[in-house]
Image 1 (cartoon, one colour):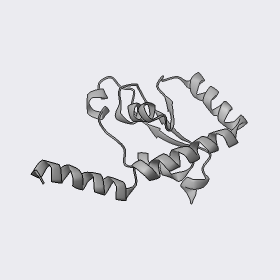
Image 2 (cartoon, rainbow, N blue to C red):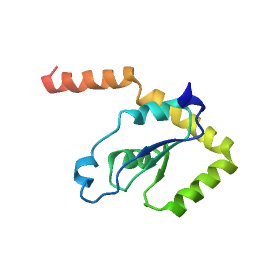
Image 3 (tube, rainbow, N blue to C red):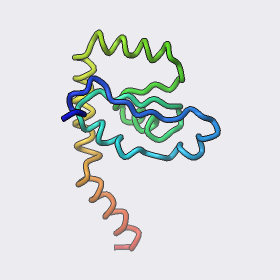
Length: 120
């Protein structure tokens, strides 16, 4: 319930250049859960990391790729001033998550990959 009623959920990803190679392919487990909540979800991290690129590729979530306090303040001000638009967009993200990221969909996709690998 808490995730569904939040004004904003944030997935922070380090901007550390030294950590980039360790985190660039990591997809946080909370990513799909946050998108499925119906609450606006901000992925805050550098371009090139998996969650940012996934959001961009599928036009889902909200992304901020610059490490910038003023840009974050600007984003939060826009969110505060137009919660309904952000919530409506989040409902579209929720539909995407249900169609593409649910446990059932992912399980079936995983089984297909295994079967293909086994030559079945």
